[in-house]
Length: 228
Image (cartoon, rainbow, N blue to C red):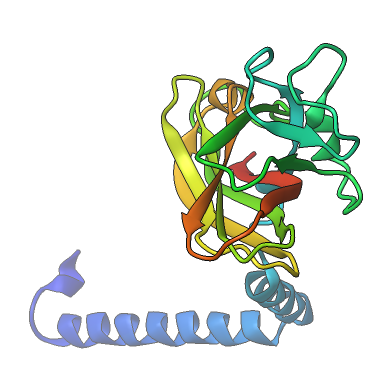
């Protein structure tokens, strides 16, 4: 303690501080020169530059799993000419196989014609608490058919069980060659809310032209992105 006072004691104190600084610097150099430490630094740097969040984010594709408005006359038929929502006719099966030869179709020049379909439930790895679903994307494949020159529009809306809209994909002029229509929305949904999702397909004759045209829908998918 006497070294803290003036005179030669102060010189000794400054010398001790300088010596300590040298030891610290030497230790840092020694750590950097230690081969094991260098390897550890290399591995850590590699992990930092390649780390992604794919291990905590999941995606799943939901498809129509039931005719929701069963018994409601909606002027949609399947590819076999069977009216949807009639006994033993399950039009949802025509929309979930990804095949262009299975489809649902409207009658001539549809006027705000709707059909509703339940969707698959959320997969088992979606957390059961909180709101893990952060993004919903809907896609559908559609084609204008018939020999007329009408303009046909189409939309597919994803809705919660209470009717709240989540996201809608639409096109006001569906091509005769067929097309895929897609839309997505950031959202917050619980697993239970995902289980209650359904889709509403709407076809309309937007006007113009003559003759008869129909809307054909061959596939509907809803993709969810969620935090595991």
